[in-house]
Length: 283
Image (cartoon, rainbow, N blue to C red):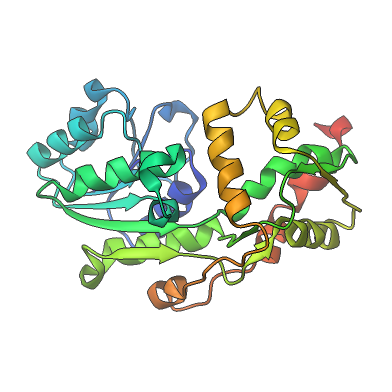
């Protein structure tokens, strides 16, 4: 049986559907399983990756785990997994670990700590390292719906937006094909886009004009203070600044694993058009 952690996430949701469609036994774990709506016949279970008391029951009878990177109690999780008989873990990490100084980048370090703990264990570990998720553009939904400009400190910063379905399909491939077990895979979208280009594409898809408010680092931090801690805000700002005007390196790994090219950003935008256009009066 395969345990999928982070059951409320988009990647886990799509992955569960793919595995269930294959007829494979799947258990979906979440800190709040009561809110899950998996395919009929897929059991859910409480699994809080920060609470080792939830590990034994969730891992009973499990041989394979799809794991979200949570560094807090990862050593405890690995110990419980090993004792339960888990032989393969697929980790959803981040390509940020490949940066020039990941140990001093809070965002990268949280993923790197999990990678290191797993690689030091006796459990076969396969690592997926996606870059920037296309869904990060969801942070712009509110100002776009409100007809307000999107605040950006580095509008010319490049990233490689990847569709969550491509990540899920890549995870499905490495979970089900033994040839990929133990591999390290860097996943990107099909093209390097600046934030400005992504916003232009959103405007074209939604039919709404979208403007950009070019703010300073400090202005953006102040605007986001209620949502992102100063430490992580600085890490994001540093990452964007390092990619300002510099195209992101791309891979064909999605196509190599799934058999089809990675979905373009416009596909994600079209599928999520309601997030950017639903009128506030109908919410």
